[in-house]
Image 1: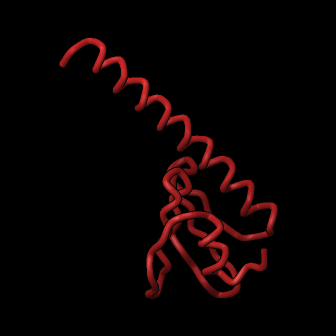
Image 2: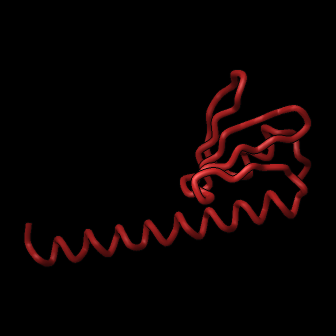
Length: 88
């Protein structure tokens, strides 16, 4: 691999890691502001979110969520809020 290719790849990895860290923080803040209960796992990389009897596993860095007890997985904190029945 050429040095320039390696430098570009490292730059993308750094930007991606920063973006995921920012997503983890802003998503957790958004849930807390709306009074949504969640349990933090793995230093914030995984949240177990519960509201109105519904529970979902949420990875805020990537935005992925999986509803427990069945349901379609998806992405995005706003889609998660909609799934949980939270009013905008």
